[in-house]
Length: 418
Ligand code: HGY
Ligand code: MN
Ligand code: MN
Image: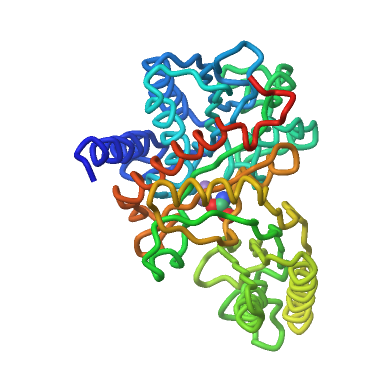
């Protein structure tokens, strides 16, 4: 590989690490929906984008939108995007890599205008941490950021629309964030976030579908009481009920091929060593490629929560935060993307994504494709998340071949033929 190619990959990685430095918690990368550190991220991406001649704006949902025109004013538009928010104490590449690579792809054009325009979108929110509702940015782009979502409140009782205003944006202008009618395809480049590519020593994967996911909160309500004076048979211990349930979640998911279920967040109230816990809200994240299996799992796990609660005289309530069906991606674009990898001399495989991505929100509205890069150590949602520069170069080379194949108007709708 020539030094310029290594340089461009190293440059992409350096830019991702620079963006990772903008955080709400010093010493780690934590950047939720429209928190103040997102302003600095936008400023840096704007500088890089405008520096290569792109025009940039931030839409009313806080998505960064960078535009590179096509060879004619009404050219069709290829969207390249991913998200700029993170989970707590995140790595530098989940989401950010797809946005930085989008700008780098335009940079490789060296001023050339293709028969289609390119719009790079840095979505403002995909993880769903601040408001327990993922995909806020991409929902705005497909016109689904509705009043119910805008009224959701974070742990400081700030609503989504108040967060938008506090960021200096106007929720009334959210309809202007909707995707251009010229959009003919969406491409998201993202780390795999799992161990498959590394285990097969394969640099890239073309994603065929994204599994469905359910996100819920279950709250166990018992009786707070004195740890010393309350005999075991007279307790209504909410934490003991939740703990028994958490183990049953792990056991049930382990018994079903392709099913994953996670209790990643649990809070204990009043959380004192000498007090029996009376109030325990817990998260539930269930995913499977088959929606029927996922829904059966959710129903079964709710029943096991009720059983664990009932034997202790504890109540349990549940409310859904996300019921996202499995989403197939565009198989014609997937074939073009895999052909592009082959032309770039890169080995790739097909796979289903266990992680959610903005592509699952866009796919019902615009033909969508995803390219995964290998995750060393299979690690993600972790500060040690990383990528190999050779894989970043492979992804860039594949993306440039993808543009060439699109240019050959294989995927551009005929009426858009420039
Ligand atoms: O949780 C996910 O699937 C993704 O990382 N947002
Ligand atoms: Mn993530
Ligand atoms: Mn992501």
